[in-house]
Image (cartoon, rainbow, N blue to C red; front, side, top):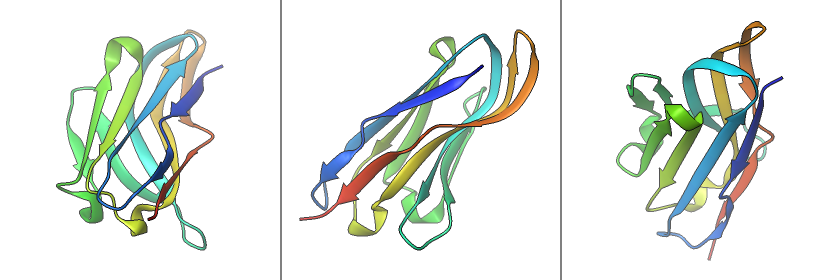
Length: 121
C-alpha cells in the first residue's frame, strides 16, 4: 500500500508564498512522475505542475514563473514552491504519483487527500 501525505497548505495574503510538500510512503521501488493538481470550488481538478523522475517539469500556463516543482527521489517526496500567490490560486491542492511500482508490482496512480490553500487579505 502506498500513501501520499501532503503538508504546507494554509492561509496567505495575496503576493505571499507557501511551500507544499508531499511524501510517499510504502514499499516503493520507483515513481515515474509526481505532480500537483488543484480543484477550486465549482471547478474541475486541473494540473498545476508535474515532474518526472529525471527532473523534467511542466506547468500550467497560469502558474508559470510563479510556481516551482521539485522532487527528492531518495525520499519519494515532491515539493511545490508557490510565490506571488493570487486569490485565484485558492483551491484544494492534491498530490499525485503516477506509474508507481512497488515490491508487490505495478500500482499505477495514487492520490493524496489534499491540502487547502487560501489566498485572501
